[in-house]
Image 1 (cartoon, rainbow, N blue to C red):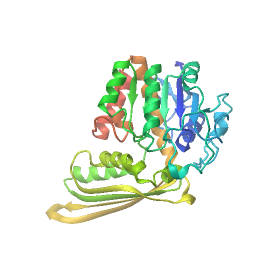
Image 2: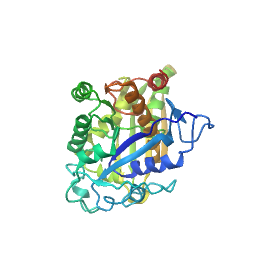
Image 3: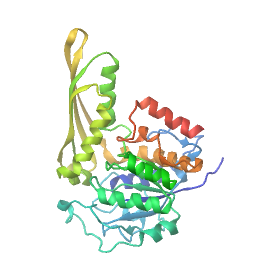
Length: 353
């Protein structure tokens, strides 16, 4: 077996998505290119890199219940509530304090104790020899996202933006990364089989079969801190824009409305989406599709992130800079939207060439 270099990752925001990702690294650590197809993975090996090649070398958070603890312990600290899929062995990496900036919504500042002073971010990134920063900040954290994007530029570290603050898909920011000789990918991570991808696939199916989509809506509910955070409208605005564009990017849908409806604590990390599509078929006869999707939210995105991280490592190996075109497959708000098949082909070519 060919052993590749480790992929050295720093995670910003050790919430449910990061917890699922880190647990997944342990869960799938022994899977390689010789393994049979494995449930939950799109690629056992990507560009020669296995899941076991991803190593978290630094982590940052503002929750005092997590800061100072080993990553293996912090991923299970409240208010994290995603389902446990694996024990995580002690890593020797302690969670560092990040600057709060706008990373905590006003209505959530009593949800958990906040750190006082941030640690020396520059020193930690340098000492950990971080290659890739993965931003799992809460939705609406614009100032905090820009802070970490700037740190990536300063330290020549690749940047993956998992949230709907538009950095990598913004031409001004992507130009900064290109000039700095640093690759970036984003924005707003998709799920493997989440509400947006199901909605996108269903509407595309209707259009491909010669029918119309006259109007459609998607209503989401959930019980994790992501949903609680987005109960404030201004923090949710870019998320709505990102989800809407992912579904209606081709301009062939009539009326469309997508959005979170409510935060229901007892659902925890379970996300439930109700999707309705109305249109016309042969002879202008109306039809209607009603579907419900219930998923564990955070593992659904972790299955995408493991491939985004490996794709970014391939970009680093190739010396690529600026916005990465393969973002179209992994993110809801890339710089350029395209069909899922076209985007998947980009990833495959990127991994092979």
